[in-house]
Length: 162
Image (cartoon, rainbow, N blue to C red; front, side, top):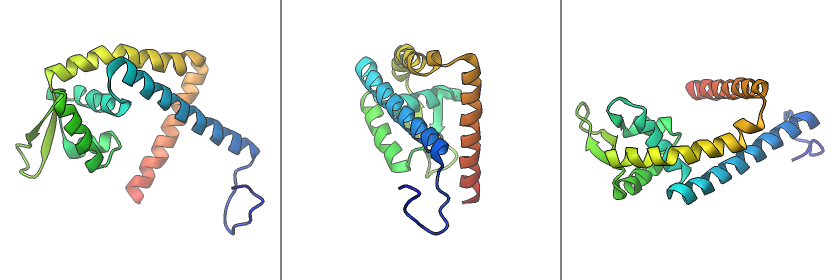
């Protein structure tokens, strides 16, 4: 939509804002497409599965409540449950009942899943380095950190209010 279409109360993006928004959007879409392709090629898993394994690997005991894992991976509970089904089929994750809540379930990263994650990590890092980190100067990396943190904080504040 352009500023030539009048809609009451709409604060349109100016040319600089439009360029910034479109560059950000295109960059993130292209990057995640490249990352997903590389992860599939090198590790046989989509990036979403890799992210689940990473989140589990970073917890004590390599286990996390399914509801918390859904929040941390920004996934719906049904989408996460489907992904965990696939990861269980591969022997990378196991489900267990939560000992403190009969309704809750835990996802647990298996030793095999940890080994798969460890094998996939170098490829993941190489793609991130090639397409993002090595393209930027140290100052741009600091700016990207500041920009990302500002956007995250704004979105999380909206989530707390909304």
